[in-house]
Length: 323
Image (cartoon, rainbow, N blue to C red; front, side):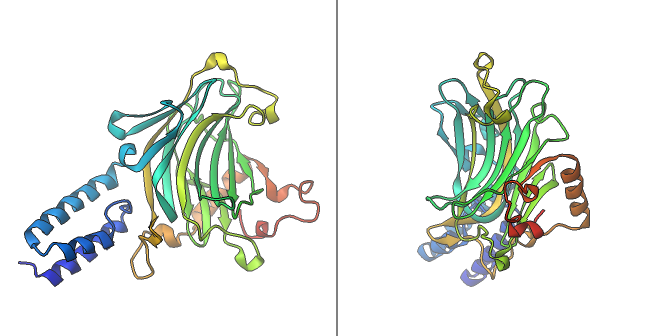
């Protein structure tokens, strides 16, 4: 039979193990320990613990929009379907829609499968991004700018620190992102931000603070996604407007995975003494770097780092280290 101290050790070890395997949104360790101090009856605690552990294992393999996000706006245009496994956002002439994660993260790896608006999507913008609160916010963006039927989507990426952005890179994709679901990921750790598409890196923004460049590392961010009308700028600089006869426009999201340091009540679920998943120290190996170069050579259509007209006094300092 477990003693009280041995059970505490087992709980800590189990929590650390499962936390390093994609279960950061489950019950945090301080909640377990609080329960222990209030419930000396080991039988009731063991029921509580093993029930929570089973729930954690299940949630690692099947994330649920019902438990992980809130539909934040759209007056019913955002819908959670299939028992929480699918979320659709709709745009019509009256409004778009959007959702956000319930948790905030200070570093993490967020994966989302998205199927974009098919057909004539000109004027529409579908998004998946991280953002902090306040007027001097931090932000990491995936934005998909719609286009006329037969023309490719533009994938727009950017990073903001303390409310300052102007770090745009844009891409066309090597597939039709409206035909099927594809996985888009943001890896954000203290050293770098990596944007990936179906596990292929398309961009890396390194921490260049020694060069005097701001890097988002102190403000917890929430995950957001939205579908909205931006025909004043989104397609060919606003020359092509949204064709409302094609409405409603629908974008679909599934298989959300939030593996990160949950930040709540001023505390992080990660610490220097707790093992974390490899994303926290991850960097690109030679294979990933080669794939990144392939994408940027063949599919990048705009890079602020090479826009000498925009920066006549010289390119931004971080361009020497980031890709």
